[in-house]
Amino acid sequence: MFYIFCPYCKEHREEEEFHARGQAHLMRPSDPDNTSDEEWGDYLFFRNNPRGIHHEMWVHSVGCRKFFNITRNTATYEILETYPMGEQPTITAATPDVRHEQGVQVADGGWQTVGARSENKALNEEASS
Amino acid sequence: MSNVCEFNTVPDGNPQVESPMAWSYQQHPAPRANGQAGVVLREKALMGHLVLRGGAIVLDEAVRATLGMNLPAKPNALEHDDSGERSIQWLSPDEWLVIVPGGEEFKLERALREALGDAHFSIVNASGGQTVLTLSGANARDVLMKSTSYDVHPNAFPVGKGVTTVFAKATVVLRRPSEAHWELVVRRSFADYCYRWLLDASAEYGIDTQ
Ligand SMILES: [Zn+2]
Image (cartoon, rainbow over all chains, first blue to last red; front, side):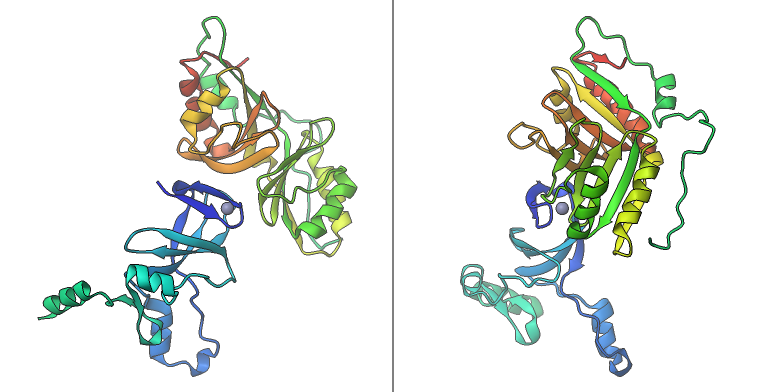
């Protein structure tokens, strides 16, 4: 079991009290009339699936019932920070320490992937051939 | 005064009412405690429950004017008035649970609406939807330790604290109004389940249900 810090209850609670609700910081296109099908498709259906740092929306469903955000490492399950809705993460895949320690790399367009370490690169090449 | 239809959920003529526990008391009489009962279970039946929602600053003034109590602004805080009969509990950053003696809730709701005027707020009378169980006795905390994942050690759960958390497979509001007492605010539909869970969990210590 994890203890997760609820930024509204201001204390750690059992994981049992929470639910994960997917990728955080999704923005609805501001001008729907002039948004391409591809952009709508990305907004509605396509989500990042990084190995490494991920920003997720969670809800303290048995508790204050507020939504908030978590920065989590999908490889180690480590929760690096929690912060209220409307705020930005202080730890991202581009944070130098994270890049260095976990080999997380930001690709063009904000996609977060792991590929910086040579063993991963080798694995990728093997898989594709 | 806001443009909200309100009505007294307790009709005139004092009709007979039953608490959400009535069926349980009839169907599941508590086992007789052999000698000293380690757990004492009571119900504060048919209290008035109001859920207040809105900004803390707006609500605080109205609550002080009508109830003579401060709105607890700290997360997980529980406040009582001097008599100990009325309480306000923080549920979330914009939500509070007010519990008053049964019959007072409609008068209070009107007074609050009057005081709040056109402010952005909501008041819901939840009196029929939940009830309050109290646990005391030497083994009350042992029963809670078996029933909830929340830490009920006095260091983590001092008097004047209240949280919404898991209890068995249900959700309850767990609060500590005094050193010796714990309160569980249970939903009507889970009341029987929680009651039977408590009977079972208390069996090894002996339970007194009056
Ligand atoms: Zn919370």
